[in-house]
Image (cartoon, rainbow, N blue to C red; front, side, top):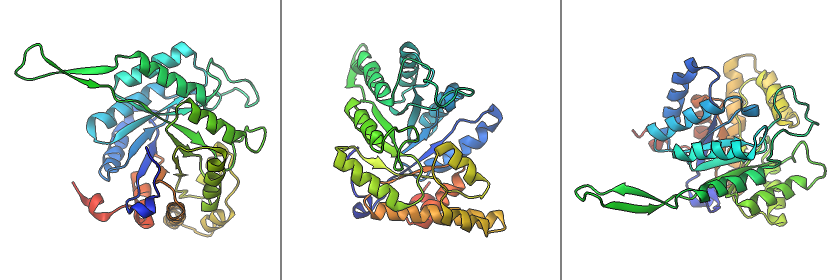
Length: 319
């Protein structure tokens, strides 16, 4: 995945993140969201694994649905927390057997009830080790696939297996557990050395935060593409929860704008406008595309792309 200035290329790649529903009765709604997102031809759709692996099985179900019903690349989240080497390797094989060849390797959050300061459970201590394990498991599989040739009994077409692509997380404002100011960059370099092919950032709320981080990462030796992760915050009530999950500081300008809007519709417009402006600014600054956290809502992220001028109307309307 070579890095390219999306604004100079004229076409801005975009991608989305979804999460598996907690109950099966919400699957039809998610399937409709996937259909609507797939229609605009994103680069990939990623599916979270769940904190502490809480929705792992359903994650694979959603990824299989994306692969079976769309032409979009499904990208699986995998976490280290609570996993043994054997358990993680078995899970990776299960994903590979399902045809999933793109991953986001994460250290992950501690399970519910485990203090942040306690050592993480499991054999894998870092995302870099998980990146290596994904590559190792793939290398152990057959190096090629075979397909029968119609009209030639016993003959087979041999093709090399597709190599896995492994994305990792990056933290523009520093990782909340970093012990010093450059530790998160050291960790990103370790992930790159382990074989990562792409980095996707944690949330940020100002373009200069992302652009300055990319400059620092490049100066430190990071060469893989760094994709900005953007989440439209469409209600004042959602903002504290997002900040709690990410550890980011309160974005005062956005918080005030959401506060002065008395209606849900007005708050939604504020959040979309802020996310669209952020997307435009990072692309203008050289970002290789944008990755949108969708909250399983296609309307909001599609509106953000339209307002940012990234979503081409002809593409959106094509069937």
